[in-house]
Length: 298
Ligand SMILES: Nc1nc2c(ncn2[C@@H]2O[C@H](COP(=O)(O)OP(=O)(O)OP(=O)(O)O)[C@@H](O)[C@H]2O)c(=O)[nH]1
Ligand SMILES: [Mg+2]
Image (tube, rainbow, N blue to C red; front, side):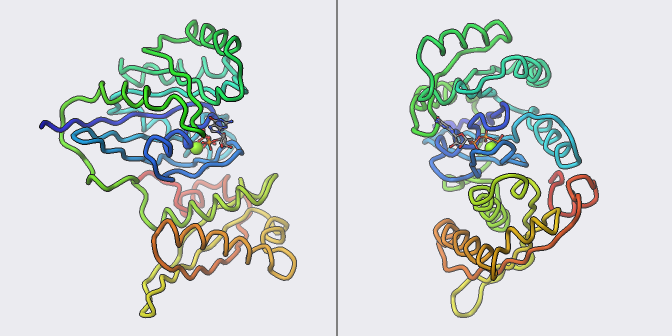
C-alpha cells in the first residue's frame, strides 16, 4: 500500500490545551502540560503512525504578547511552524475564550498557512454547556473561514476519533519521515529538561516556573546500569533560588525525586539525577543567554 504523510500545526492562545491534545492524539506524553500559560517554549513534534499513514503534530508555544527575548524566540517558533503544513488546528479554550485576540492571531496565521485547511477546535467542552458552545461557534465562524469545527475535551479524549479521522483523510501520498515506533522529535536530553521544568511548573506558582531554564550538563550510562544525569536549573533571582532549594535543601530534593520517578518511567531505565541551581539575572531579556540556554532554532 502507498504511504501517506503530512504535518499538522497546532496553534492557539496559551493554555488552550494544545499540548494536552497532541499527547492525547499521539498516545504518549510528548509535550509537557500545566495549568499555567506559556508552558510550551519551543516547537515539539508528536508523531502518530496508523498503518500506512503518518502524521506529525507540531505543538507550538501559545500565542502571547512579546515582553522579552524568550518571548521573541517563542514567536519565531510559531511562525516557522507554519511552512510545509498539510493543515492546522486552531484551539480555543471554550471556558475562557478571548475571540478578539484569536481574531488577531488568525489574521496573522492565515496567510502563512498558504491556503491549507484550518480546523477550529473548541476544547474543554466538559466545562461549558451546549448553548454557550453554539454561540461561540457562530462567533468564531464570523472571524475566520474554518474548514470544519470540532468540539472536544482533550483531557478526557472526548471527540478525538472524529478529529483524527478527518486529519487522516487530508494526508497526501508521501514517504514517512519517521520510524513506525517514533513518537517524539525530542532527544533524551531534551525530555529530561522538559520533565524537570514540568515538575517545577506543578510545584511552584508565581514567577519561579517562568524564570527557569533547565540545561542537562552531563548524561552518561554507568557500569552499574544506572544513567547518570546532571542538570542545571537557571533562575532569574536569588530569592527564586532560595524557594527552589527550600529549607535544608528539602525543596530541591523533592523536585529531584519527583523528576527522577517520571524519568525512570519515560526513559525506561534507572536514573541517578543531580540538580544544581544557578542564578542568571534577567536571562530571558538577554538574546545571548536565551540562546545559550537552548532556545535557538535547530
Ligand atoms: N477541563 C479541561 N481542562 C483541559 C482540557 N484540555 C487541557 N486542559 C487543561 O488546560 C491546561 C493547559 O493545558 P496545556 O495542554 O498545557 O495547554 P497549552 O495550550 O499547551 O498551553 P501553552 O503551552 O502554555 O501554550 C492544563 O491544566 C490542562 O490539564 C480539557 O479538555 N478539559
Ligand atoms: Mg503547550
